[in-house]
Length: 239
Length: 239
DNA sequence: CGTGCCCTTGAGTACAATCAACGTTCGTGG
DNA sequence: CCACGAACGTTGATTGTACTCAAGGGCACG
Image 1 (cartoon, rainbow over the protein chains, first blue to last red):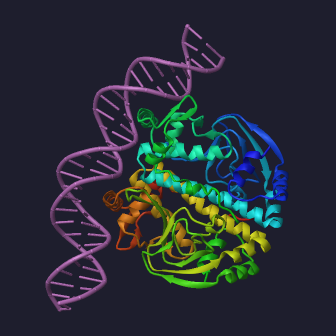
Image 2 (image 1 turned 60 degrees about the vertical axis):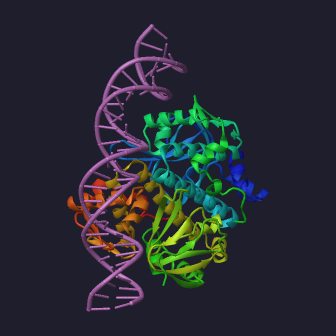
C-alpha cells in the first residue's frame, strides 16, 4: 500500500525489513479525496500527517490580491505534511490537484518512532530536508531563471521525481496541471506560460498537452533548464 | 556561548536544563571566520554542522551566467547547516557576509542525541522545518510580490528574527548587506533595489543606509509587505 | 446544445533590467 | 596627511521580458 513511499526512501537509503514494518504499522487508515479539495488549512492544529499514495497535491500561499504561489508539488510517495509533525500547524494550505488516495499517519505513532527508532527518525527527518532542498531550487528558478527555463526545469524535476515511483520514463509522464497552475508554480501568468510552452514545443524540446508531458529531447531540455538533479539527493545514504 | 541558539529555541518550546546541557556538550569547538569566506561548499561530504553565534551568513545557488540567488540569510542563533546532518552534503554553498563566530557540532554527537533524546531530536528537526517555512515565504516573495514589497518583507522578517536574539528593536537593527546582496535575496538587480529603497525612504516606511535599518513606520512597512510572522512559528510548542 | 473551463493568439502596457555615467566612502600606501 | 583606487551607491535614458486586456476556439459535461 505504501509502496511508492518505500520506493522513494529506497532511492536514497537502506531500509531494513523491521523498519519497513514499523512504517507500515504507522498508518492508521487510508482515505480518498476528490480533486480541488483543501486537505490541510494553514494554522489548523495538526495531529496526523498525510502520506500521498496516488494523485497530485500542491502546497501554496497567496497574497491579498489573490495572486497564488504554489510552493511545491507533491506526488505519489511524498509524505505531504510530515513537517507538520514538528511544526504542529502549517504556514500554508495544501490542495489536491487530482483525486488522491492517501494514508493517514497519527502523530503519536511518529512520536513513538522518534523514541524507539533513531535511524528511521533520521530518515524521516531527511525527507523533510529533501523538501527544503526542492524549495531552494524553486527559489533559484523564481528569482533568477528566465520564464522558459523555469518551465523546463519544473518539467525536468517532475520527470525525475515521478520516475522514482515508476510514473515517468524517458518519453514522458502524466501531468494533470492546467497552464494556470503551471503559472502558479513558476511565478508567471497563464498567458505567458502558454507562449513559453509553445516555444518549448516549436524548439522541439518537449510537448505539454492534454494532461501529458511528451519529452522530445531530454538532453536539450535539461540544458536550457540548467537542470542538475543533485538537489534531489538520489543514491547516497548512510544516515 | 550558545546563548543565541538557546534563545531561538526558547522562543518556540520548553527546553529542560538537562537538554540544555546536552546541547552545550554537543559543541566540540568554536571558530572564527572572516567575511566573504565560503564556509560550506555544495556537494562536499559533511561530518560536522555549524551553529552561527555571531555575524551573518547566506546560503545561495547560482546559474552558469553568474546570476546568484541567495536562498536564505542566517543570523546569530541559527544552526546554519543542521540539515547537513541528514543530507550528508549540501545542494548549495554557504558564505559568510560578515566576520563570524561559530560553534562546531560533530555529527556523531547529533547521532547520539537522536539515540538518547527524542524530544531534543524533534526540536532540532523542528528547526530545519522552520528553515523550510522561511524558504516557502521567500518563494511567495520571489514569485508574486512586487519589488518594493519583497524588500519590505525581507526587512520585516529580519527584524523579527534578530529581535529574538536581542539584535533588533522597534527602531531598527544592523544590516551588513550591500544593495547587490539585497538584490540577490530578492531576485532583483542592484540598481532596482537602490530605487526601491529610495521609495521606501521617501514614503517614510524605512531607511536603509550604511549598514543599518532605521524603521520609521513599522505598521506601514508591514502592510505594504503583507508581513505575517506566522511562518516563523513563534510561541507555540509541545513538540 | 448550451455553458463553463481551458487553451490560444494579438495588441498594447508596465515593471524591472540593462547600459552608462557619476558620486561617495573607505582603506591603503606613498 | 593626502592621493589613489576599488567597491558601493545613485541617477538618467533606454530596452525588453513578462503582464494586462481582450477576443475567439476547442472540448467536456450536463
